Length: 95
Figure 1 (cartoon, rainbow, N blue to C red):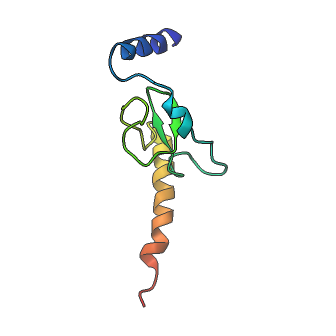
Figure 2: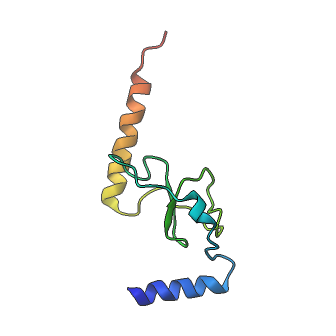
Figure 3: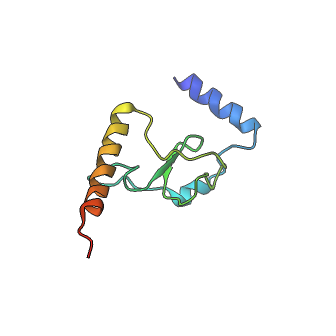
C-alpha cells in the first residue's frame, strides 16, 4: 500500500498537479454528529485532505475535488440525509 502511495505522489510531481501546501489554509475540521460531505467539505485526492472550499477545483493543486463518498454504504447515508433535509421544504404549506 505504501509503495502505491509513494508511486502516485512521484508520478504527479512530474506534472503540474502537485500539492503546493496552499490547502493547509483551507483544512476542515471533522464535524461532530454528521459526515464531512453533508457539512459541505470536499476532499482532494492529491493533497489527501478535506477542505472547506466553494469551488470545484482544489486551490492548491488544481485537481477536481470529490463532493461525494466513493463507498456505496456512505453514498447511501449521504443520499438519505439529503432527502431528510429536502422533505420539509417540499411538504411546507404554501401561503
